[in-house]
Length: 205
Image (cartoon, rainbow, N blue to C red; front, side):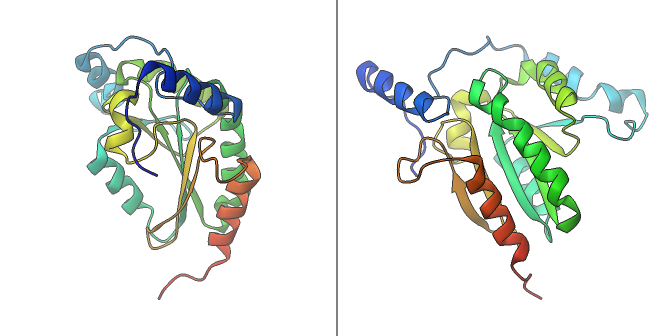
């Protein structure tokens, strides 16, 4: 699907209503105000500055742009990867996030890795961390360097949240799933099917 673009007010209202009705959040939803980049850097690097490795099971969050995201995908080569694009202000994202955690717990021993990419403003990193800690999301957690307004272009998705992508063991993007896709009736079961299909596929030697 083509990246999200801002459109006229009347069309935006209709799109927002359809997206929310399907269980997703649109790009024009009200979001928290941006905070300074300095605050983000200090927050995200606080553990490193102390010189101590984070305790086992701790939540770490990496601020990324497109290049950083691609490096994260590459680091999981050999595993099936599910990426969950989400935000703390997105009700459907919050509601469906536990499904992502449970899916990871169910299939991680069979070769599934999960990356959660938060589209919150980078200055909201501590709110994101708190949510992830509450959900026990100790997989690979990223937060967009540009916040939601720039994330659709930066990470090449349609701008509606939640949004899910699945990569095969060679790092190829093989599936996109979004409540805003009117060609399918979105449900968490579609995510399960895409993951199981790739886990069953043989890796290329």
